[in-house]
Structures are given as structure tokens and as C-alpha cells.
Length: 256
Image (cartoon, rainbow, N blue to C red; front, side):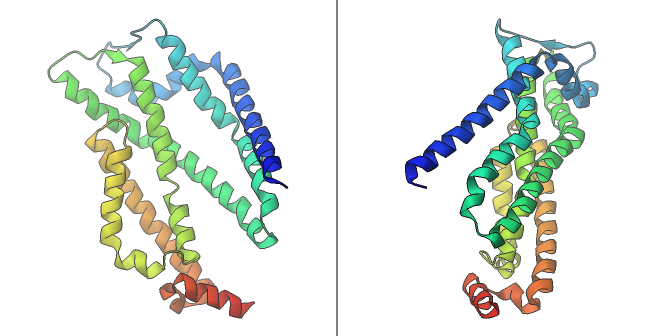
């Protein structure tokens, strides 16, 4: 299609996504008190005894419920979002490329939700416990609902994105965009780079959260490399672990 037809198609699909999320958020809005209670469940045991959430502004309640409903509305609309993205890009791909699309998108979604669940079960309580301890040693904590829930949502999204690392490393390795040997020989730089990323993206500025995210990302990095090594050796043999992108392209040409 001409460029403007592509832009019109993109606009139509974005409109469908936005309208779907807004509609879902409106439906979810009425259930936000229950959803907020579920969100706070991991940290209830670390809150000061007898404390409760406090809203400090007239619009605070609406703002909190709107953010939570929009967040869960987007989660509900995940199938629609993926369908619209696939519908826009699939016509541009050949048959071989299309075979990779559905498994890749499925893996992305699964890893994102796995990261959110991991954060909910193992990170929230530890992170907020440390933050509250820094207050209760010298002052009385006022539990600002807007701040707490904003940080919780950012942590959920942050860990969901962090869990995409195995997919990125896997494809960079098996497509030899970055040779497997480069990941292995330059592991020190990778480890330092991951530490910097964790220090930048953790929303609560807590060293505990940063350390936990760093440990998770290191584990995901090593697991993804182990899987990539197995796939490369199974597909092309052990010598392929040392191939550059050009060598891999030459091999594909000779094979075809």
C-alpha cells in the first residue's frame, strides 16, 4: 500500500487499541477498591500497626482509581492489542518470518506476566518493608495511597519489562547479531551494564529493589544464554558458537 494508506491503517489499529483499553478501564473502575486491596496484600504485613492508606488531595481518590483501572484495563485488552499489532505487521513478513512471530509474541506476553507475578509475590513485600523501616526508626509513617500504588504499578511494569531480557539475548545469539562467544567473553561488561540499568530503572530508589532486580536479571541472562547455546549447537553444531553475523549469513545461503 502507499505510505498514507499504511498510516491510515496504523491510525485505525491504534484507535481500536485505545478505545478498547478505555472501555475496559471504565468497566474495571467500579471494581478498583477490590483490586487495590489485592495489590496491597503483599505489603500489609510490613505496614505500621494500625495504619491505613491516606489520600492527601481532593482528586487523589479518582486519580488512584483511574490509574489502577487503566492498568488492569490494559491487561484485559492484551489479546486485542496483540491482534492489532500482528494484523499490522504480518502482511509485511514472508512465510518463514511469520512462523517466528506467534511463538515470539506468546513468549513476550508470558515473560511479561511472569515478571509481574514474580514482583507481586517476592519483591513488593521486601522492597516496601525496607522503605518503611527507614521511616519508622525516627518518625510516624503516613501511608500516602497515591505514592504507594504508583510505585507498586511501576515495579510491576519494570519487572515485566526486565523479564524480556531472555528473549532479547536468545534472538541476538541464535541470529548471530551478537555472537555467542561475545556474550561469554565480555560477561564482565554485561554484568556492569545490567547493574547500571537496574540502578536507573528501579522506581523507588531502594538499594534492596535494585539488588533484587539485578540478581533476577543475572539469572535470566545466564538461563537465556544456556538455552541459546543448546539451540545453536543443535541447529548448526558447536562451531556455530563462534560465528559472526556474516558467517551465519553465508551458512544460510549455502544451506539454501
